[in-house]
Image 1 (cartoon, rainbow over the protein chains, first blue to last red):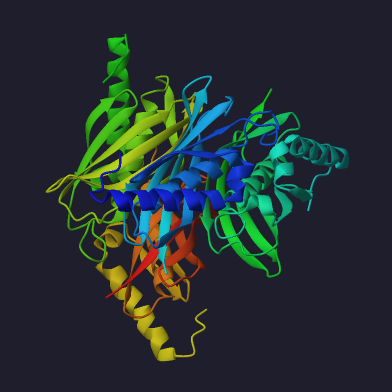
Image 2 (cartoon, each protein chain N blue to C red):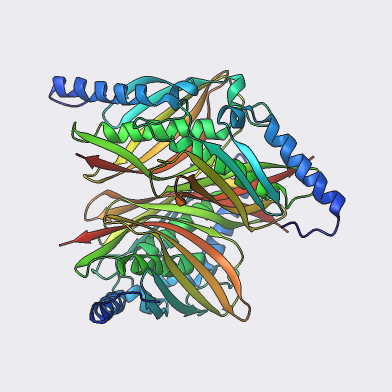
Length: 146
Length: 146
Length: 146
Length: 146
């Protein structure tokens, strides 16, 4: 839930994130769509597709990782001044269960905001047919201005 | 360099890796190609493509990560019995420079083989136009049999 | 909260963890004490001491890391058969704020249990004078039997 | 090997690292000693001690981690302006073999220098009785000025 007093600024930030996401052609290649943008929290949905598989027919771990990285990066960006951009410094992903479902959601959350560095956590959930946490990310994002 | 005494086994392992890689439709989507398979070391090449970009027109970090994860996983698999399969437990990727080039290579290497767990390291190099290390991975792979 | 039906087994597991912790001379060197042992969750308290400082007089990050590693490892061990032992495969720690307080608590939690590998998360909190999350760990533990 | 043209500056940097290390009371508690300080590379030695053990009588993984973190941090600091200080943002440590030896060495190396962030890698070697890599660290350091 956005907690900004300035509703216009809130909308500008949401727009900025949506525009930046739209420029990431790789997100379109992966069929990823932003579901929700809030202060410090972004959700992105995606689905199983014949072009995104690993050797056993499950969703490739790289797909989940790329999308939850975007969710974390944009979550960080919502906490930054409007003119800032964001860059991934590093992330770690732990794979908890095989991605055997058909629909998924990546959730990026800010753990600790900062002027330069933002510490984030991300989750990848199978949302259809089951509700299962399949991966967990810990990421460091860097904000850049100008 | 393969150091096996059994040349036939060496070829079987190479074939197994190539077949498994070929089943990963996501690697084809990313335009990734295996360059070399040796004991504990696998190299995969890939290039810039309009479908693989982040918001500034560079290669998306998720592309590099997915491919170097495959390089690490298959490097681990070359050290395992022929009937084994491999699974990523976790990886961490540090992004050192923007992926601003046009051709890249992911190199997966086994740091410590094991019966169950294999510790690997991966590098992503820009190979055209420059020669630059752009990302470094540290990964834990799990071997599975039967 | 322990959710085992078998109260005797629950006590045996708690005893096993306490005995193992007592054998870690390094935990005594760090002044660490177990506060609570539950299924998949262990809390350990510790405090500032003149022997545990970094160059600016704050608690050394290595102290927090060692103790939250123990908290995660023992959290994993509570989910394992009584005859198992536990080993750290890898961990990542993100340092969110300087450890400028005087009393701290490390909390280890199981994110995903498993027969061989257990995925854990740990938190280090300053509990005096403030209540602040100062570090976050993501860890892979391996269970060993016999 | 130091590659600075300014020999006086080189000595000032070495002195600065040695003084900062000397202020870390935790390094004395661990019996750690700096062996060598070069541009982007620091080596620290340490040994088995009855106060530093885990439950099986081996060196506690937290000891190795704390010392290789210091080696990485000081390696980063040698690449920074004289007035800078260094802070650990995050690290990941993979444990490759049990620390069953009696003497060890932590080696911190700069993978990618930077004005704000420095990417480092660290190794922990058993040096007596054997020569074995027992742990590998990947770390992000932040430089701070003023």
